Image 1 (spheres, rainbow, N blue to C red):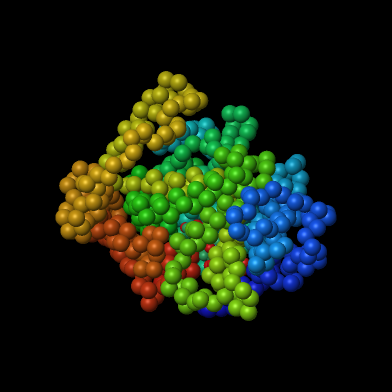
Image 2 (tube, rainbow, N blue to C red; image 1 turned 60 degrees about the vertical axis):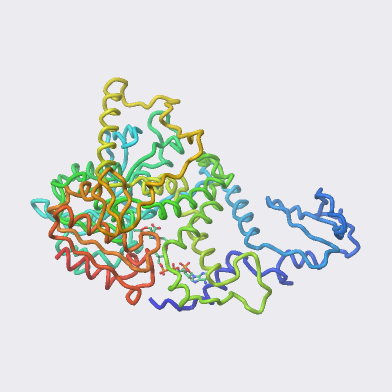
Amino acid sequence: MNPLRGAARAASRSLRASGLVQHHDAASPIATRKHRLPLNGSIHQAPWRSIQTNPPRRGAQSAAVREEDDGSSGPRIQQDSSSNPAMSFPCLDAQDAKSASLSARSLNSGPEPSYNTGHHKLFHCDEPLLLDWGGILPEFDIAYETWGELNADKSNAILLHTGLSASSHARSTPENPKKGWWEKFIGPGAPLNTDKYFVICTNVIGGCYGSTGPSSIDPSDGKRYATRFPILTLEDMVRAQFRLLDSLGIRKLYASVGSSMGGMQSLAAGVLFPERIGKIVSISGCARSHPYSIAMRHTQRQVLMMDPKWARGFYYDSVPPHTGMKLAREIATVTYRSGPEWEKRFGRKRADPSKQPALCPDFLIETYLDHAGEKFCLEYDPNSLLYVSKAMDLFDLGHSHQVATRKRREENAKRIAKNGWKVQAGDPSCSLTLPDKPYEEQLSAAAPMNEPVADNGDSSSTSTGPPQDLVAGLAPLKNHPVLVLGVASDILFPAWQQREIADALRAAGNKQVEHAELGEDVSLFGHDTFLLDLENIGGRVGKFLG
Ligand SMILES: CC(=O)SCCNC(=O)CCNC(=O)[C@H](O)C(C)(C)COP(=O)(O)OP(=O)(O)OC[C@H]1O[C@@H](n2cnc3c(N)ncnc32)[C@H](O)[C@@H]1OP(=O)(O)O
Ligand SMILES: N[C@@H](CCO)C(=O)O
């Protein structure tokens, strides 16, 4: 891919498509209306009406302020006698127009888009699933797709785990010819070689592309789960996938392969079901989520939840929080690529340098992010984003976390044996309230980097080696061949996190760990390298799988 390809052309296409034409532009609807306005300030003609404003500051010029009544939610403010003309905000107009068109959709079919990437197979499991944090799915579906043939002894299956937002559609199929998200990585002679292997990819539970998630119907009352969906973990997703494998009669996988969240799941599958997995591939993942990654996902969740249209998750019969989703995806995109890539690709170029700078997207990097957000905002269920992203934050293969989870599961299993498969409404364990006492920084939290941390479950890493808690947690994988790949330009899952996996596995006694790091001379695509670099990611995966 040529990173410098037609960016400016694409930008102007995107700007035109979304109405993001620069302000102070006589061609824009607002400017046109403004030029038609009488200069004497007679402000009560339709479609303008006056609105109340704060009284002008003493000494400040009094301004007549008007609002255009065009049915959109935001006021368009015009100042008749100000020193400078008011700016226009085509990026906000575009959001308003989008909300208006979504709310105009038929309420019979529901304004909520149907999240669908096309034909897939469906596994329905009637047996309830107990989740790690005590939630319950009374039954669930898993959407999945397969490529290649399962051999007679069912020993050639590869389970491919997805990143956060992907569907099961990793490669085109005769039933769904649309290109998949790993189109070139799967197929005859490809890294996941379908001449040899039977590749299975599922949509995770919690997702929205056919597997049970927050937009699914709760069988208990026939209504969508929304935020009545329980908190789930990556291990819960893996347990659900293994129910599918059971139904297919696959006792042991040839390999568990995944990137990003899938790279975390790939390890989790090995830890949960060590005897059911042959090889493991973990690309651009981690063995436990670190604070910086949690921080970046937190900001995405916050902007989404602060969109009033999110409505605490109950938006399915209304306009979805597309603005929150768009902003969340823009933040996500900042974490998925890299500064050096954008330096080369966009530099400091503006979409139209002949115009005045704008507060709406203006630099090419801004229009690029805007486009990425816009493209995604109705493609994925907002609640799925929240739940799946939170599941990533909760991920920790450290031994002490595994012990605590097992204990909690045992207690919840006892509760179920006593009360049945239902979590009581108002269960205090379901709503976190922060302690009254403000957090006080603990001195022990910041151990000097060159001193080993005692094996007390403290998850801090040190320069002397991986934490013993993680070494113990990854011990179930000590006899598995494991390929760990990282990318130096990745800021979301920095390369040291893959080194941590490899080091912890080796410290656990694993002598079959292959670890490689793609330097910035090889890829500047950051975290998304796994989606884009067939040669360097795919090549290594193909060689490792054989
Ligand atoms: C395992 C998993 O996680 S799978 C999930 C994968 N899928 C996704 O992530 C869905 C979202 N897609 C993406 O993030 C990306 O398209 C990728 C990673 C799949 C591919 O990346 P790339 O091929 O490098 O595409 P890139 O991110 O540069 O985007 C190109 C788009 O931006 C547009 N664009 C490029 N520069 C600009 C600019 N300055 N201003 C506006 N638009 C721009 C292009 O015209 C193109 O638009 P189009 O997609 O509507 O045709
Ligand atoms: N672009 C990928 C990255 C995270 O894996 C996604 O949206 O899922």
